[in-house]
Image (cartoon, rainbow, N blue to C red; front, side):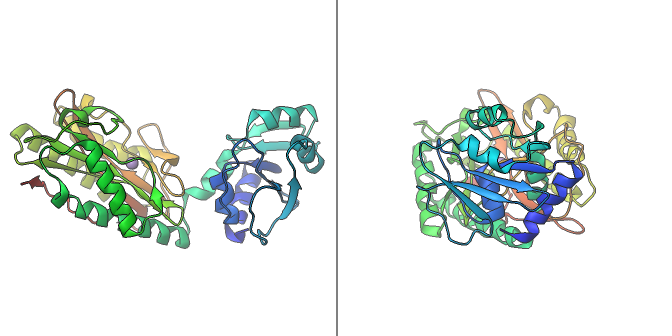
Length: 358
Ligand SMILES: [Mn+2]
C-alpha cells in the first residue's frame, strides 16, 4: 500500500470517528494499493482498521500482484464472503462502509452482527483523493498533454458534410496514435443545434456552414483522466455566436483567474456565472461550472454554487462554463486546473481564440 495515502485516509477516519471501514470502490482500492481490478459480481474489498489490522479480500480467480503491502484473505466461488468479513471486523465498534459496497454483501454482514452500527464513510477516501500528490499531478499533466495534442490536430481534419460520429472516430484513432490508454468518457461531439442539448451523443448529423462544433473529449493515461472542451465554427460565425463565444471565454478565464487556496468552490462558480448572467444569459448556463477529476472523470467535489468548501493546493478540477441556445447553438470552453500555492496551473494549453475553420 502507498503509505502516505493510507495515512491520509486513516487520518480522516480518525477525524470522522470511524475506527474501521470497508472500501470497495475499485478506483479507491487502486489509489491505496496500486492494484486496479473490476470484480463484476464478486466481492473485492479492502478493510482498514485504526488498530492496523488491514486486510484485502480477494477471489482466487483474480490476478493479483504478490506484494500489495496488505494481508490477503482469499475466497473461492461459493464461499460465504460476508462470514469471512465478519471474522475480521470488530463487532463492538462502528463500521464505515463506502457508498459502492453492494447490499448483497452488506446485508448478510449485518445479519452476522459484523459491527455495532454502520455508516457511509466514503468521505474518508474522497477527502484524501481530492488533493493530488506530486505523482498524481504528473499523471494528470501527462493525460492532458495527450488531450491537448489531439485537440490541436482536429481542426485540419474537420470538413463540411462530415458527421459527428466520424469526428468522434477520428478522436479515438488520434488517441491511439498519441499513446493514450483509453478514454475518460466517449467523445462528445455536437454540431449546430445539437450543441445546445445537454449530454448529446454523437449521431449522423452532418456538419454545415455556420455550425458551431462543440468538442468535449478526455483520454486516460496511467489510470488518470483528462477532460477538455473547445468550440469552433465552420466557415462563418454570426454576430450572435461571436457574442456568446466571447462571453463564455471571458467567464472561463475570469474563473481561472480567481483560483487560489482558500477560495470557495461556490465563489469560483459565481465568478463565471455572474459574467454570463450580466449579459442576459443566466438561464442558458444550465450546469455547474466544473467537477473534480483524477482516477475518475468525475470525482468528489463539484465546482458549483452549492459547494461552500474552500479549495486546497493539489486539488484538480474542470472550469467549463457554457451558453446553450435551444434549437440554435451551444458554446462550452473547458480546461483542467491544479490548485498551486498561490494560484493555479492550467493543464490545457490549446488556444481559446475564436476559430472559424475554412
Ligand atoms: Mn468535464
